[in-house]
Length: 403
Image 1 (cartoon, rainbow, N blue to C red):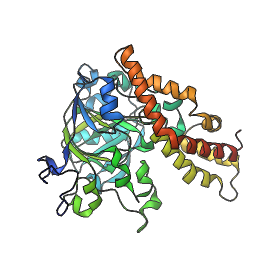
Image 2 (cartoon, rainbow, N blue to C red):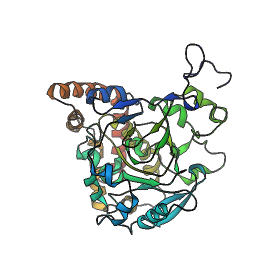
Image 3 (cartoon, one colour):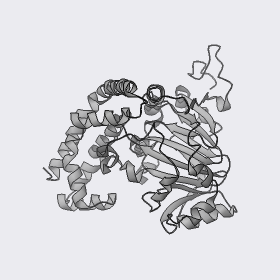
Image 4 (cartoon, rainbow, N blue to C red):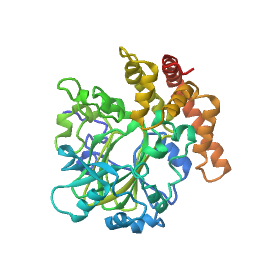
């Protein structure tokens, strides 16, 4: 950016590296040789976004998912499941209520404006059999059930698994993933262009933007003068329109077929489909990002859930019933989850969390080393988050009479 030669993007000579848009190149790791320990240290715990190549070559999805017709004719796909799609380019798109089948046929026809079946929740949407076509890479989703099935933390096992199918010119504007989770996206067909920020620059980029900083949309945030907007990472005048971005580490790169893009927790990012594309995304929580998820859950309890429960005339049973309906679960299940929330970060649970993550390592010695790395990192990251979470969870439990 003009007038800021001390930008972190500059080289020793004061010039930016010769890469697209003046950003740093998005690192590329080789899944054929990347060890689990290297993944933890270099990327997941470091909050460093990256591409991972040489993953999934033997998956049925590598062949089957290249054609939209496969999904339209698959016996296990619920084509009548209602979804929201996006019509138009990313920053000007409008939401369209449709069905999976209608969206797929519209994209297959290839006529008219760009159309994106974005965030198709294929597991929640009765199409979970598509998971038979791939295997979750060993770097990701290594969590015990108390994390992956917890509705307060996003119920990642069911509700954070999506397919993205869209035409050329579609994409996702700058955003942060829900629950401050991490995500891996595998590209079956097409080519995607990414701009990703380093996860440690999260506060810099999200200051003053309201609930979007935590991966949520809130209509009240959009009222004029109340909040700023996230920077448009693809805007031709990015550094002029959003000067603070010049102090962030932005990475740029093109994702080719068969590659994974890994976005760690707190990673602000944006993506464009260079051509028609089909991709798979799973967001997840594990030992590498649970502290961030707990921070988000604590904020949500203090700023959203507790104030709602204290509204005039709101009775505890009525509130639990309303909240359960919003989450799509039974009142009994939600009551049990909320009553157990203060003890969620007990020593036993944290040990199981570390063991589950470390199981991705190649041998027993590597597992031991990974477990020790995770244990040390969690001790630091949970130092302030844990007591704040326990306090908020206890207040909520007591307020609702769930002791």
